[in-house]
Amino acid sequence: MHRAIRLLAHGTAVLGGIVLTGLVILTTLSITGRSISKFLHLDGVQGVFGTLAQRLIDTGVGEVRGSYELLEAGIAFAIFSFFPICQLHSAHATVDIFTSHLSGRANRVIAAFWEVVLSACLVLISWRLFEGMERYIGNGETTLFLQFPVWWAYLASFSASVVTCIVAVYCAGVRLGECVTGRPLMPQA
Image (cartoon, rainbow, N blue to C red; front, side, top):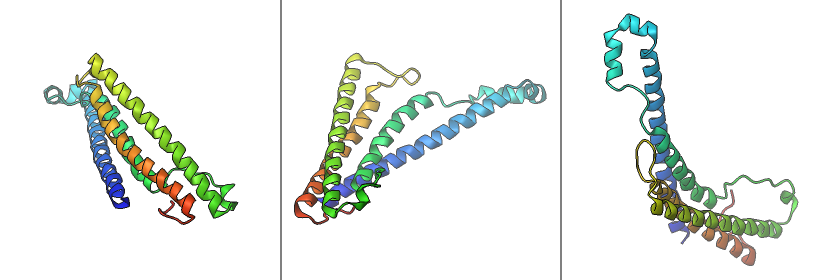
């Protein structure tokens, strides 16, 4: 079971990484295009290069249309894609000033408690994403520039959040098992 959960978490993280890399490239192209367009519109450049500058402007050099919309949807998906791997490896930020002096049993109980709380929060977030997706499916809202349905972004984030919930519930179960057995079943960060 652990192997399947690990593959699911790693696969989702790789997919999120691919999307994030694509968004970095898209943003770079958009910023570069906007900068070139602004440069070509300068009076001095228009005066020196005249028709060449205008020809470049006419080719459509500029900001990538709808890049903000794609960035907004893609970043939300990427964030939810990285949650499972972070959850699986207990890589969330922790403050253990007080707990580092507690016994192993006490630390296992605390870890299990917070895994259960975090799992409940992630399930709640996933449920609300689903509700939001249903609302946008119902009203047919689209993005301003690209005119793609808003619910598509919700669906992508919801899909990754379902994987997050699966991994989170699994981790909570393992941490509870560690409390019962008193031995580590999954490594800590």
